Image: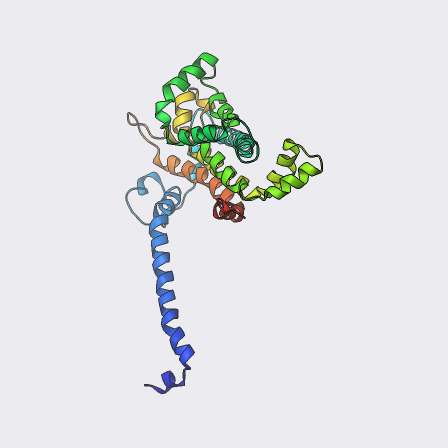
Length: 292
């Protein structure tokens, strides 16, 4: 044993292997993170490359740095890509508002109100989570076609105000069950009704689960490609996801640089939203289903 090793206390000697293990674990996690993030990093890097360099090299550092792809992508279509961004933002915000309003009220009814067949309707609601979207696609399309809603945002927004997302109802039901009923009873003794209890007690205590539902609702609506593809026909009504498709044409020349540039911009709102509400999102997911 060397003099330096002998000079270490038993506690310090035991901490050395733990420190090395932790360092290797961090290095392995960093390597795995880089592998997972490589496609995203490649997309961002390629958006600043000339068209002839995108697929010619796998380097993340552009040999020739240019932002021309962003100019082409933003103004290269018959409608500005910013207009499609606005369409996506409007639809996503309305979807968030609709889901929070309708799903929270439905969850409050299932957890706090007494009505006939409550367990049956709750089980039926959960059963809709197992129903494939494609099974109801044609009936829904025919219904919206008869309403005259095709080629408008109404089929993408109005159902959100009718509590059609059973996942969010279930998520909020689990959270509401953890709120003590003594608060409701105290409010009832003070003369508060069900609506006042809902707005004054339940909602203020449910910010984590509401933030979780809002973030997931925004992300799923913003990233949705299938529903806008079915119901939107005119390019001025396209969302950002449909706009990205127009840069790739199997029968003509595809502008990959513009596609990657606009894809990078499309990811930014989701990234910013997650960073802003990360704490509430984690808290909402962690506490859902815990009974206090």
